[in-house]
Image (tube, rainbow, N blue to C red; front, side, top):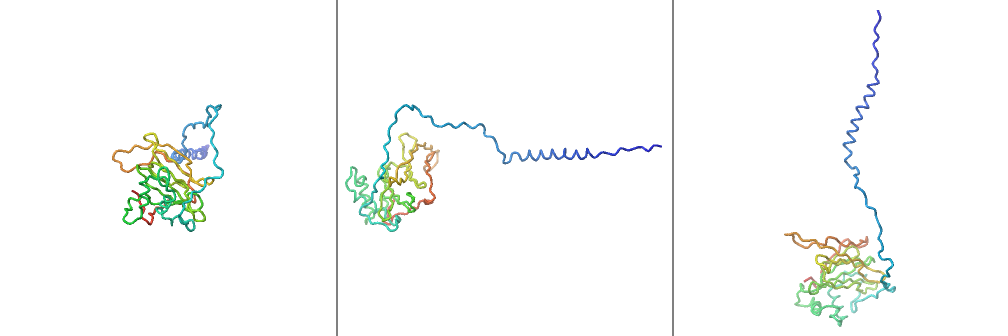
Length: 273
């Protein structure tokens, strides 16, 4: 009697079946993690193109070169020097009053002020005067020249929302030098890095003109270096307070500039109207 031969079961299908079971699991894991942190295409990128010079054959206007010698410093006559170039020790009201006495005769008034504004400045600090009516505002301090010392920023209120913004620095010998003076119908004044930013109404309704005044070491004064016209956002009904323009002229901050300006009223009681 022949003994039946039972064929031995091959283990090859079992070994081949393991990868077949693991592969779907890996596909599920990969599919589950594909949406976390992956890069998503943003579509085609427009080709960058440089500026095209229009009408190159036209002869353009000539720009006169800057004075290589720089602008002479405008020191405040009759004002005592400060120690260690520390403008924090300066009384802003006394400083403006000294300028009024130093420049009494101009086409507009003393030191370019309206006569009524000059009279109000000279009355600041006197016995019986109202400190709230003094046109000299509380000062601000910021290193605007990059010499490691703060400069003094003073605002003087004029009629009809006009304002005189002035900046003073102290030389190593302690003399005060006025390095910026402008009078504008001002919406707001800001400090950004080493720049003084003025926001004034532009000639177009609904727009403001933003001007950045920066220190020019060659000219030894603050000069308007950048200008931008921006749209003023429309106030929503029921909103309170003023809002800034939809865009701002950013200035390059400096690591040696103060983190934030510090305002402190002068000892003689200067304040805004």
